Image (cartoon, rainbow, N blue to C red; front, side, top):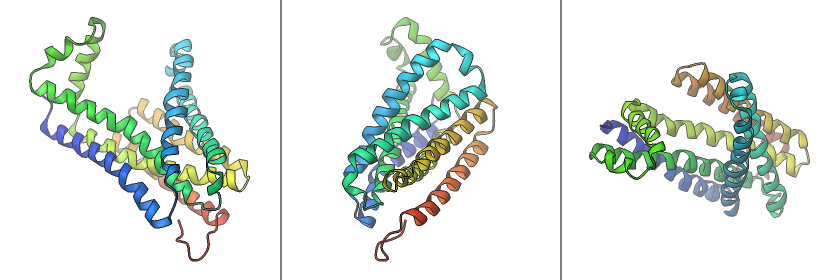
Length: 267
Protein backbone atom coordinates (compact mmCIF):
# COMPACT_ATOMS: atom_id res chain seq x y z
CA UNK A 1 0.00 0.00 0.00
CA UNK A 2 1.10 3.56 -0.69
CA UNK A 3 0.82 5.51 2.62
CA UNK A 4 -2.18 7.84 2.81
CA UNK A 5 0.14 10.66 3.90
CA UNK A 6 2.17 10.22 0.71
CA UNK A 7 -0.97 10.58 -1.37
CA UNK A 8 -1.98 13.72 0.54
CA UNK A 9 1.45 15.25 -0.03
CA UNK A 10 1.29 14.37 -3.74
CA UNK A 11 -2.04 16.21 -3.93
CA UNK A 12 -0.63 19.23 -2.10
CA UNK A 13 2.39 19.43 -4.39
CA UNK A 14 0.29 19.00 -7.52
CA UNK A 15 -2.11 21.68 -6.32
CA UNK A 16 0.74 24.03 -5.45
CA UNK A 17 2.33 23.68 -8.90
CA UNK A 18 -0.98 24.31 -10.65
CA UNK A 19 -1.93 27.28 -8.45
CA UNK A 20 1.54 28.83 -8.74
CA UNK A 21 1.30 28.61 -12.52
CA UNK A 22 -1.98 30.54 -12.39
CA UNK A 23 -1.40 33.00 -9.57
CA UNK A 24 2.19 34.10 -10.29
CA UNK A 25 1.48 35.56 -13.76
CA UNK A 26 -1.67 37.22 -12.42
CA UNK A 27 0.34 38.92 -9.68
CA UNK A 28 3.01 40.11 -12.11
CA UNK A 29 0.41 41.34 -14.60
CA UNK A 30 -1.58 43.19 -11.95
CA UNK A 31 1.41 44.75 -10.18
CA UNK A 32 3.40 45.88 -13.20
CA UNK A 33 0.89 45.91 -16.08
CA UNK A 34 3.03 43.58 -18.15
CA UNK A 35 1.99 41.84 -21.34
CA UNK A 36 0.61 38.31 -21.00
CA UNK A 37 2.22 36.59 -23.97
CA UNK A 38 5.79 36.55 -22.51
CA UNK A 39 4.44 34.06 -19.99
CA UNK A 40 3.37 31.63 -22.69
CA UNK A 41 6.49 32.41 -24.69
CA UNK A 42 8.39 31.08 -21.69
CA UNK A 43 6.32 27.89 -21.92
CA UNK A 44 7.16 27.46 -25.60
CA UNK A 45 10.87 28.14 -25.18
CA UNK A 46 11.25 25.64 -22.34
CA UNK A 47 9.38 23.03 -24.36
CA UNK A 48 11.54 23.52 -27.46
CA UNK A 49 14.96 24.19 -25.99
CA UNK A 50 14.88 22.02 -22.84
CA UNK A 51 12.42 19.19 -23.43
CA UNK A 52 13.11 18.69 -27.14
CA UNK A 53 16.53 20.03 -28.15
CA UNK A 54 18.42 19.49 -24.91
CA UNK A 55 16.83 16.10 -24.28
CA UNK A 56 17.67 15.10 -27.83
CA UNK A 57 21.30 16.01 -27.29
CA UNK A 58 21.38 13.98 -24.08
CA UNK A 59 20.12 10.92 -25.94
CA UNK A 60 22.79 11.39 -28.58
CA UNK A 61 25.73 12.24 -26.31
CA UNK A 62 25.02 10.02 -23.31
CA UNK A 63 23.87 7.18 -25.53
CA UNK A 64 27.12 7.22 -27.49
CA UNK A 65 29.51 7.68 -24.54
CA UNK A 66 28.17 4.96 -22.26
CA UNK A 67 29.12 5.61 -18.64
CA UNK A 68 32.14 7.76 -19.55
CA UNK A 69 30.20 10.86 -18.52
CA UNK A 70 27.53 9.47 -16.20
CA UNK A 71 30.09 7.34 -14.35
CA UNK A 72 32.13 10.39 -13.32
CA UNK A 73 30.13 12.72 -11.08
CA UNK A 74 32.39 15.71 -11.76
CA UNK A 75 32.25 15.28 -15.54
CA UNK A 76 28.51 14.57 -15.38
CA UNK A 77 27.95 17.71 -13.28
CA UNK A 78 29.96 19.80 -15.74
CA UNK A 79 28.17 18.34 -18.75
CA UNK A 80 24.67 18.50 -17.27
CA UNK A 81 25.07 21.96 -15.81
CA UNK A 82 26.39 23.61 -18.95
CA UNK A 83 24.01 21.71 -21.23
CA UNK A 84 21.05 23.10 -19.29
CA UNK A 85 22.61 26.57 -19.09
CA UNK A 86 23.50 26.82 -22.77
CA UNK A 87 20.21 25.49 -24.13
CA UNK A 88 17.84 27.30 -21.80
CA UNK A 89 19.65 30.63 -21.70
CA UNK A 90 20.09 30.62 -25.48
CA UNK A 91 16.37 30.04 -25.81
CA UNK A 92 15.70 32.83 -23.33
CA UNK A 93 18.04 35.18 -25.21
CA UNK A 94 16.44 34.47 -28.60
CA UNK A 95 12.93 34.86 -27.17
CA UNK A 96 13.70 38.26 -25.71
CA UNK A 97 15.65 39.48 -28.71
CA UNK A 98 13.36 38.25 -31.47
CA UNK A 99 9.88 38.02 -29.98
CA UNK A 100 9.84 40.69 -27.28
CA UNK A 101 11.32 43.64 -29.18
CA UNK A 102 8.28 45.83 -28.61
CA UNK A 103 8.52 45.29 -24.86
CA UNK A 104 12.13 46.36 -24.36
CA UNK A 105 11.07 49.60 -22.70
CA UNK A 106 9.03 47.68 -20.09
CA UNK A 107 11.59 45.58 -18.17
CA UNK A 108 9.10 43.85 -15.87
CA UNK A 109 8.13 41.71 -18.83
CA UNK A 110 11.37 39.86 -18.08
CA UNK A 111 9.69 38.64 -14.89
CA UNK A 112 6.61 37.51 -16.81
CA UNK A 113 8.81 35.54 -19.19
CA UNK A 114 10.76 34.03 -16.28
CA UNK A 115 7.50 33.02 -14.60
CA UNK A 116 6.39 31.24 -17.76
CA UNK A 117 9.70 29.44 -18.16
CA UNK A 118 9.80 28.34 -14.52
CA UNK A 119 6.11 27.46 -14.15
CA UNK A 120 6.04 25.35 -17.30
CA UNK A 121 9.09 23.48 -16.04
CA UNK A 122 7.26 22.88 -12.76
CA UNK A 123 4.16 21.61 -14.56
CA UNK A 124 6.15 19.42 -16.95
CA UNK A 125 8.57 17.91 -14.44
CA UNK A 126 6.67 17.86 -11.15
CA UNK A 127 3.00 18.32 -12.02
CA UNK A 128 2.83 15.48 -14.54
CA UNK A 129 4.97 13.28 -12.29
CA UNK A 130 2.69 13.83 -9.29
CA UNK A 131 -0.42 13.20 -11.38
CA UNK A 132 1.07 9.93 -12.62
CA UNK A 133 2.06 8.98 -9.06
CA UNK A 134 -1.48 9.59 -7.85
CA UNK A 135 -2.99 7.42 -10.57
CA UNK A 136 -0.56 4.55 -9.96
CA UNK A 137 -0.96 4.88 -6.17
CA UNK A 138 -4.73 4.60 -6.51
CA UNK A 139 -4.32 1.43 -8.58
CA UNK A 140 -1.87 -0.04 -6.07
CA UNK A 141 -4.12 0.67 -3.10
CA UNK A 142 -7.15 -0.76 -4.89
CA UNK A 143 -5.31 -3.97 -5.69
CA UNK A 144 -5.19 -3.46 -9.45
CA UNK A 145 -1.44 -3.77 -10.00
CA UNK A 146 -1.96 -7.00 -11.96
CA UNK A 147 -4.24 -5.19 -14.37
CA UNK A 148 -1.71 -2.39 -14.73
CA UNK A 149 1.15 -4.82 -15.41
CA UNK A 150 -0.89 -6.55 -18.09
CA UNK A 151 -1.03 -3.29 -20.07
CA UNK A 152 2.76 -3.03 -20.51
CA UNK A 153 5.15 -5.23 -22.53
CA UNK A 154 6.95 -7.98 -20.56
CA UNK A 155 10.31 -6.20 -20.86
CA UNK A 156 8.84 -3.16 -19.06
CA UNK A 157 7.16 -5.01 -16.22
CA UNK A 158 10.29 -5.04 -14.05
CA UNK A 159 10.51 -1.27 -14.35
CA UNK A 160 6.84 -0.99 -13.42
CA UNK A 161 7.40 -3.19 -10.37
CA UNK A 162 10.25 -0.88 -9.34
CA UNK A 163 7.86 2.05 -9.62
CA UNK A 164 5.36 0.29 -7.33
CA UNK A 165 8.09 -0.36 -4.76
CA UNK A 166 9.37 3.21 -4.92
CA UNK A 167 5.92 4.69 -4.31
CA UNK A 168 5.38 2.38 -1.34
CA UNK A 169 8.76 2.93 0.29
CA UNK A 170 9.58 6.58 -0.43
CA UNK A 171 9.29 8.76 2.67
CA UNK A 172 6.08 10.79 2.47
CA UNK A 173 7.79 14.14 3.00
CA UNK A 174 9.80 13.66 -0.22
CA UNK A 175 6.66 14.24 -2.27
CA UNK A 176 6.02 17.47 -0.39
CA UNK A 177 9.59 18.71 -0.77
CA UNK A 178 9.26 18.45 -4.56
CA UNK A 179 7.07 21.55 -4.33
CA UNK A 180 9.69 23.43 -2.32
CA UNK A 181 12.27 22.49 -4.95
CA UNK A 182 10.12 24.26 -7.57
CA UNK A 183 10.17 27.48 -5.52
CA UNK A 184 13.94 27.44 -5.81
CA UNK A 185 13.79 26.73 -9.55
CA UNK A 186 11.25 29.48 -10.28
CA UNK A 187 13.30 31.99 -8.28
CA UNK A 188 16.31 31.07 -10.42
CA UNK A 189 14.36 31.46 -13.67
CA UNK A 190 13.17 34.92 -12.64
CA UNK A 191 16.77 35.88 -11.88
CA UNK A 192 18.20 34.48 -15.11
CA UNK A 193 15.50 36.30 -17.06
CA UNK A 194 16.57 39.62 -15.53
CA UNK A 195 20.22 38.99 -16.45
CA UNK A 196 19.41 37.96 -20.03
CA UNK A 197 17.07 40.94 -20.38
CA UNK A 198 20.00 43.21 -19.49
CA UNK A 199 22.14 41.39 -22.07
CA UNK A 200 19.52 41.92 -24.78
CA UNK A 201 18.17 45.40 -24.03
CA UNK A 202 21.40 47.01 -22.86
CA UNK A 203 23.52 45.09 -25.39
CA UNK A 204 25.79 43.61 -22.72
CA UNK A 205 26.61 40.06 -23.88
CA UNK A 206 28.61 39.41 -20.71
CA UNK A 207 25.32 39.09 -18.85
CA UNK A 208 24.21 36.33 -21.23
CA UNK A 209 27.40 34.40 -20.53
CA UNK A 210 26.94 35.08 -16.82
CA UNK A 211 23.41 33.68 -16.97
CA UNK A 212 24.75 30.47 -18.54
CA UNK A 213 27.41 30.15 -15.85
CA UNK A 214 25.00 30.85 -13.00
CA UNK A 215 22.52 28.38 -14.49
CA UNK A 216 25.18 25.68 -14.73
CA UNK A 217 26.40 26.24 -11.16
CA UNK A 218 23.37 25.04 -9.12
CA UNK A 219 22.62 22.29 -11.64
CA UNK A 220 26.17 21.01 -11.34
CA UNK A 221 26.14 21.27 -7.55
CA UNK A 222 22.89 19.29 -7.52
CA UNK A 223 24.48 16.41 -9.46
CA UNK A 224 27.58 16.33 -7.26
CA UNK A 225 25.62 16.43 -3.99
CA UNK A 226 23.12 13.81 -5.15
CA UNK A 227 25.82 11.39 -6.24
CA UNK A 228 27.75 12.05 -3.03
CA UNK A 229 24.78 10.95 -0.96
CA UNK A 230 24.20 14.33 0.70
CA UNK A 231 21.11 14.53 2.89
CA UNK A 232 18.12 15.80 0.88
CA UNK A 233 17.34 18.59 3.36
CA UNK A 234 20.92 19.82 3.23
CA UNK A 235 20.89 19.63 -0.56
CA UNK A 236 17.69 21.65 -0.89
CA UNK A 237 18.93 24.16 1.68
CA UNK A 238 22.16 24.70 -0.24
CA UNK A 239 20.33 25.10 -3.55
CA UNK A 240 17.84 27.56 -2.08
CA UNK A 241 20.70 29.55 -0.57
CA UNK A 242 22.39 29.68 -3.98
CA UNK A 243 19.13 30.71 -5.64
CA UNK A 244 18.59 33.46 -3.06
CA UNK A 245 22.12 34.78 -3.57
CA UNK A 246 21.67 34.78 -7.36
CA UNK A 247 18.33 36.59 -6.93
CA UNK A 248 19.98 39.28 -4.81
CA UNK A 249 22.66 39.72 -7.45
CA UNK A 250 20.03 39.93 -10.22
CA UNK A 251 18.14 42.53 -8.18
CA UNK A 252 21.27 44.65 -7.79
CA UNK A 253 21.96 44.43 -11.52
CA UNK A 254 18.31 45.32 -12.18
CA UNK A 255 18.62 48.49 -10.12
CA UNK A 256 21.88 49.40 -11.81
CA UNK A 257 20.98 48.74 -15.45
CA UNK A 258 17.19 48.84 -15.64
CA UNK A 259 16.23 51.93 -13.71
CA UNK A 260 12.49 52.50 -13.94
CA UNK A 261 10.51 55.74 -13.58
CA UNK A 262 9.84 56.83 -9.99
CA UNK A 263 6.11 56.17 -10.47
CA UNK A 264 6.69 52.56 -11.53
CA UNK A 265 7.02 49.96 -8.76
CA UNK A 266 10.56 48.66 -8.28
CA UNK A 267 11.35 44.97 -8.77
